[in-house]
Image (cartoon, rainbow, N blue to C red; front, side, top):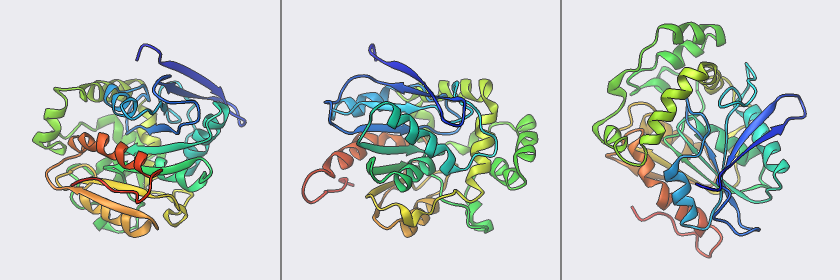
Length: 288
């Protein structure tokens, strides 16, 4: 990532958006892969994301969501609000075609960008992505630690109070997840720890946005979507993937039964193949 660039983009409503740019890997007219990071993350480029994209001729743009990594915080933002900021940043950078890819908390934001900017997004992928809150207790079923999202139901102040005493529940990660941190995805774990300390408001705003109306309906997402979900995920359980596929007009589910919340990211290279194949005839899906 020797050519990586950090863009600081002024926003019409004031403030700025920080976007990290791999700077290599794509022809001028080729789509870029817009990486929507998880919660919490700084938005900085992750080596396995850049490597998977570059191997397929794609450049990576990784926006730091509002409240993270130097991007101006907007308390009370909706999922759609954050996606609009990304859309403005892509316009400012002259991007005319992209793929929206989101992991965990980035999943809703990738889908919102696809819904709001069909002119810009040719295809989308979510990996362990959150489904819209449906008001039921079943939405939380299977989460090893649902305290953050439950506290978010009472708003920003309640979610902030919860964060003051909350501790990570190690049972959220299965053995396959833990193993990922000893390889290239170790950068994700280090970044998450740093982001949680430096920008604690980011995950507060994310969680509140997830359990409120997103400001966009999944039925608006006309572009093809690949929903990748781990069957052993104890952070965002498998039924969230099923809920997404039921609500999205042109989606398919790739269920990886043994994967947890982090190990499912091992599917990213094949998911990138699926995106690139959208431009070809037949749009073949992943080999499962």
